[in-house]
Length: 365
Ligand SMILES: Cc1cc2nc3c(=O)[nH]c(=O)nc-3n(C[C@H](O)[C@H](O)[C@H](O)COP(=O)(O)OP(=O)(O)OC[C@H]3O[C@@H](n4cnc5c(N)ncnc54)[C@H](O)[C@@H]3O)c2cc1C
Image (cartoon, rainbow, N blue to C red; front, side, top):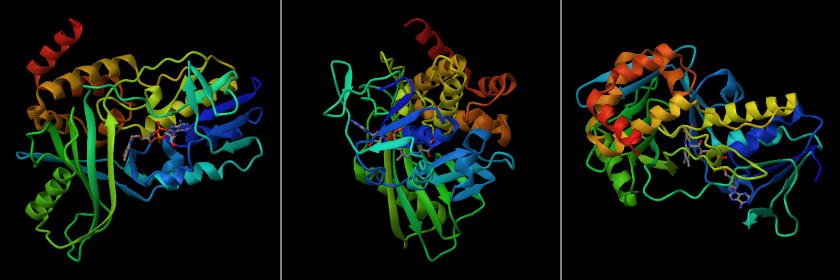
């Protein structure tokens, strides 16, 4: 393979988001190796706040909201932003959009599983080599790390109970005994919503735990007992900074550290990462896939330590956060686009003692 070839491993968010930009790199030939047709992975929604880097996803998204709420037993804070609405796009819709950008004959797709033996990648017949290899195979999740695990489904009810103008980003009025736990609710209409039970902890719960929590929540806060369920979703996202370094290739997506460790959000960061790589290729610069700044990663480390040790203070942390910044600032903060002033506001809104203790614990490691 020549230096003018770009080999991309995987057929998910990072791989296809990068490959869709082939038109910006007409001098390169793209080879994409995906284990299976991307449609075989169950469909789900990706949520993100609108910014320039995800403009194409915004153009293809299914729903947007200008308001989002953070609710605890003691408070309800609704933030809003006209400039940076909260949006969702379906996985298959985005990946099909990316595939639709492969019209040019410079892109070849191979439905092949790539295996790694002694640090070398192979499709079973040939070695994958060349100057540019971008690998998005899901990384092995280390044991004993904080995970974001969630399950949910779309609720269809005859009753008009949902406020279709406001996303419930986090509602902590649910069982807090297993770790940080909240309900995430995307109201698609007055009687349809995606409802998920999400936990940040080191252990995944039995399947019926999430479903029971959703039932209790819908009954208690929406007086909903009769409804149908569709589009089940579940996932496990490592809340961890993957800094996998591989000789002779570049890691992208979850494998390449795109997941923001403190939130599990990755979609926007993946878009930033693939745009950064494309710019570097156009300018002939060294490839650097780092997408989060070092200060953010350090603060995330402290946050994760706090959540792992004191999950019971999570509702206070998030309600303080929602009180201390406005919607635009929160959208920027969650998307890695905020300035120093906003970062300071967030830091000063946090409960001091647990954060100071966790800071020293990390420094002494
Ligand atoms: C259910 C779910 C919901 C999520 N929701 C959000 C959200 O709302 N907002 C957000 O910002 N983030 C979200 N995330 C996190 C993140 O955006 C996704 O995990 C995202 O898909 C990561 O992209 P990726 O390319 O790294 O991995 P993936 O999209 O999982 O792609 C990995 C690809 O590698 C392929 N592959 C695996 N092994 C091989 C092999 N040996 N050879 C070749 N190909 C291989 C797979 O088939 C797959 O195509 C969510 C994650 C999950 C699981």
